[in-house]
Image (tube, rainbow, N blue to C red; front, side, top):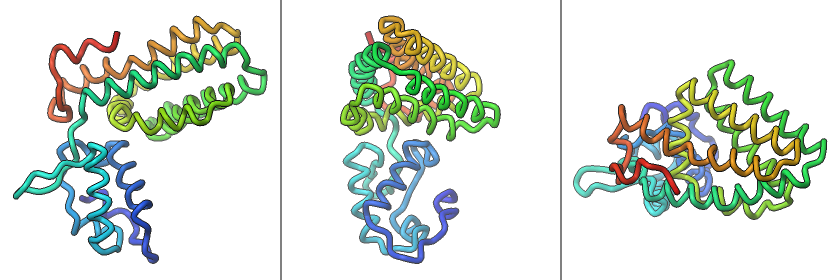
Length: 239
């Protein structure tokens, strides 16, 4: 709970929704790692609130599959469910591959300039070794592609479905080599959009989104306890 104690205690009572969003973000960003113990009392003390809203938030996070209660033992950050990662990846691939084709067919010079600005931010993040900043810019780049097609609701659907997938992505980005690979794929996607090459953009986007499963193989070599449902059948990616 050391990372939680670093959060400045809030002078005003925060809402349950704010608590939920903050704790959910910590789990998705793997600031709280799979298997890590988390208690209502310590969390309430860290945020300067009573246990009542914390209890509600813990219940919601449990419903999301992000926390797990072990009777007579305690509450822990849940492992990453491979089935949920597969579902998240399926949603992203189905929607984003279609969207990137559309974006490549209609992107303006201003749209391409906005995408290149995100690439510049990502390059700076890699130089600093800041994988959290890289992830934020990664998200912004994908949202920008959605904006080109004027489909903000599609991004909302994707965002609501991908928390387990994002946990894998955050862990994978701790590897500097992986950051470079993601960046190279982003460059290729933007290049094909700029050249108005829908099919090429779709192919690179598909490979990019499927890369999470390669990350699972790598991460599992050192942290197999981070995952639930990991076996030979699950490591082959999505066809």
